[in-house]
Image (cartoon, rainbow, N blue to C red; front, side, top):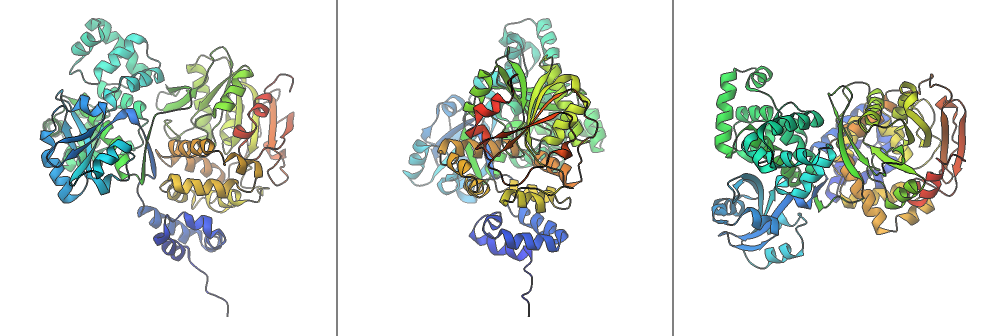
Length: 611
């Protein structure tokens, strides 16, 4: 008598007490594979149920400069405070009710008033609740040194001049525009902001129009939200703004919905039309929301909401991570050609180098390893990593994914005033790369395709854990979105550490690279930063394959194309499916899945005129 097949739901439930459900894939992949093959419909429901029980974000990364932290006694006495907290709060007596509430009921997220009278959002919790926050050794020691001590974490990116300058650089603001934009974060009106920036009102009005155009916004509240978002690369999703306003500000559901609308730049009539209420009702809710939050206007409300979204994303995450953005390069956010979306990119310079769009992978590659950057720039290149739709700071696609990604690349060429750009595309970025070549051949220089993923209609030549997961889960149109969300919600450092070992241990040179703690840390933080904001980019890209994407058959001839295959990857890669005329094939000898770490010079050499 044959054994009864094991259902995926039973496997997931059995694995839950031992840790994250995704560990089931690592420990019992053959059983999972069998369950999925038997019934993908049941598998979709099972993965969705498992995801719903997980934190909304696994590893949430916050720039340390966007936060202020302290340890207080239940009576409000400061036991430890970092410089940012001391600058914001000179008197902590007003926090006593919140401190007592946190001791009694558990962690609290609420508005607090700073020394300047401005409102900020704070998380307050006892030592047990604060143990998951990486507050540093001094704070940890202060928490453990006495009874009834609480940690306070305040979201205040708007108070960091360093982050304001980063946002200004990202939006390509002039020095005057940058001063005015920073002043607008707290100034009650344009006249006060103009005085703080050292310019007259008319000059400020003209500068504000230019700032709004560069940021792709219509009104000042929307501009403030955009600035805060770029400052801290916000990981909470805007779709949940009404819920954020309810939780953090204590607003009613109706007030929270109106607040979310006006914070996005909607006027009272526009918000009324969207919400199906009268403009008078909207104005009443705005007045009530301003009174409850202490915000000085809708612009200040937008700042508060953006900062609260970031703090709640950290508070809800399985693993909050503090740090400062590393890796060089200049973060930029530019408008798409239609003005409807924004595109994130990192430009590594130098500006006199030949531009090359270096594609990130499906889950990593947002930043370039320093050795790879050096190799590219030494070869006379200017590497630019464009974040494809739905990844990082790039808005998701609302239409054809590959066509949107190709249009984004054309927009970057125009916005950065490039003549054309080379291209190093890899993995699942191939649909966007080929669509760019088909639609904009005049903008494309030398194109290199590195280890491209074949369409679903072809058998995947590689036989390894990653390929098997892609074949059965990420290439399945019924499962791709659900499974991608299932993965995203578990992307903690500990789990990613295990996944890296499982994914790359079969290739000796990759396994050796992962013995370097810096390489491991770089990859883990890169994955978390690229995919923590939402699942849309990862899912949409795999969805192209799952829904039967095929290469375009009309790529113009005459271009310069190179197919580069890592020699240590198993399988006989067939190239005919690419349909590219005069395609030159080379082997990257000794390379595996991580040539950007192990063979940076070999990759840069692919663009040599003599290659």
